[in-house]
Structures are given as C-alpha cells and as structure tokens.
Image 1 (cartoon, rainbow, N blue to C red):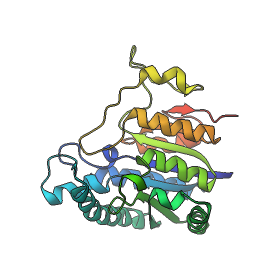
Image 2: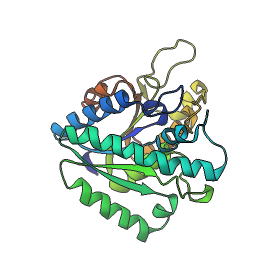
Image 3: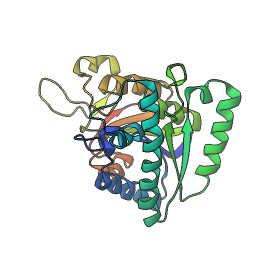
Image 4: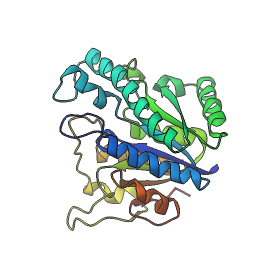
Amino acid sequence: MNSDLTVIKAGTGVLTRSADGTLDADAIASLANAIAGLIDHGHRCLLVSSGAVGSGVSAFGLAEYPTDTATRQACAAVGQARLMQTYSGWFAAAGVTVAQVLLTAADLATPDRASLVSDTLGRLLAEPRVLPIINENDSVAVEELKFGDNDMLSVRVARLVGARRVVLLTSVDGLLDPDTGSLVPEVGDIDSVLRMVRDDKGRFSMGGMASKLAAVRFAVDAGIETHIAHGRHPERLAAILAGGGVSTRFAPAG
C-alpha cells in the first residue's frame, strides 16, 4: 500500500455554482490551496475531479444537465478545457504542476491496460510537486465504457495505485442521521446505514449519496479507509488526514 497517498474526489456540486453550472472560481481556489498545503507537508495526493460537463453547459446555453449523448459529450469537451485551465492557474500559484489523465472504464478493464495506467500514475506521483488530476473521458465515453460516476472511478483508481485513503468531497459534512440531522462520524458496517440515504443530486451532477456508498463499499472491501466530507470546507482535509476532522469515516475491511 502507498501509505501516504490520498485520493481526493471533488464532485460537480463542489466545483460549480448550483444556479447555472458554471465553475465556481472561489471554490476551486480554496480546494487548490488546501491540497497544495497537504503537498507542502509531505502528503502525496491524487485528485479525481468532476465538473467537466457541468462547467461546459453554459457554453451551450443550457438550464440543466443535458440528456442526449452528443450534447453531453460536447459539453464535456468544452468544460474539461475550462476546468483544467482553472486548476492549472491556481495550483501554479502554489508551486504545484497539474497533470491531466482522462480515463474510460475500458482503460482498467484488462490487466495490460490497467498496468499502463498504473505505471503512468506511479511516475507522476514520484514527482513531489506534481498533482495528477483524473476525470472520466466524458467527451468519448459511452454507456458501456463508463465507470458509472466519479465516485466509483476514484475508488477504482485508489485500489489500482494502492492508496491509503479516499476522501469523497460532497455538499454535506458526511452521512447524516435522518432522524436527528447529526453527523455519523464513524461507520463500521455500511448495511447498517443504508436507511439514512436520500439519493439527492443537483441539476448539474450525476451521483448521489447512494452511489457514494456503493463506491465506499468497493473501497473498504479493498482495505482502503474512506471518508465522506464537505467539499466547500477543504481546509478540513488536513485534520481528516491527521485522523480527526469533520467527516464520516468508513473503516477498511480487515
């Protein structure tokens, strides 16, 4: 296991404005500064970033996430360029170089192809101030080539590179008890908390809490500590990585 490697996944709702799906520069700046701070303190990080389709919809004058494949992929093509340009600027100001890696499910479907991805990510992670930023290649991926969502992409990549932990950033502090509204800080058995899930999602996002728990199950079964945390408070990441902070922590199996 790569004992100091954390895979951080930022969802569309974290990176874009809910009103129109455009990139939220302040949110991205806060996330970049927080991750750069982790790197400054010796942590190795890998970022899985949603937001390509959501950030591209404004270029097409759309009021919500497109349903037809051609428009969705066209939005992704425009939005991915915008997304990486924004990341590059903020991380460069902190002395971090970003590397774009776009994947489809087919890239991890066979040992040979997965090994090539693993080798590339390993070489990038060997550089202390290079941050790989991964997204699904939405401009070309069709249903049979998709991971499902970036929650699942993030945990599959985490297993591939032997990450110690995954932090899924979303629009809430973590898993909330529906009866009390309080945060559930630690979960040992995912089945015991399924009743708490409401599968809410925004107009410009794909996943919800149910999809996150499916991804969490995959990760913990692979022995990877997993957290769900609030993406609008990325300054909490340092405390989470230190073993505290505000999140729902899912203990790895075994």
